[in-house]
Length: 159
Image (cartoon, rainbow, N blue to C red):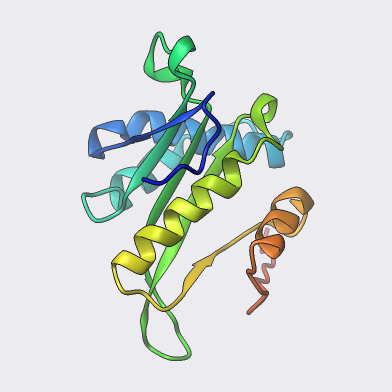
């Protein structure tokens, strides 16, 4: 891992044993975007279904402040997907989350670069992600890092 973070932070590789912690980080991300919704218990099932040794997970910690696993301040969870147009495998970002108190310090950018490095090492030609349309801060970050809109996800409630 290169020198992508300030000296205040460091990366730590996660493992499949981190499923509960990863689900709690996913819940934080979703609660922030959907504050009126309280139940995100289904996210643990998503993590348990998709987290395995081929889906790397990076945590960011402040070494001076670590007392428990709950002290991680950011994470990136990656995996593999398929480009439905070209049929090629691609690297996919399942989750990028940075604790609000640690945003705008280059952590998200450093995590994305770490993910790009992983994808290049795995010989992927593309990296992709899904971002909610109302998450302008994340959209700005991704666009500044060279991500381009490829499609739109449309939904319709049937209830």
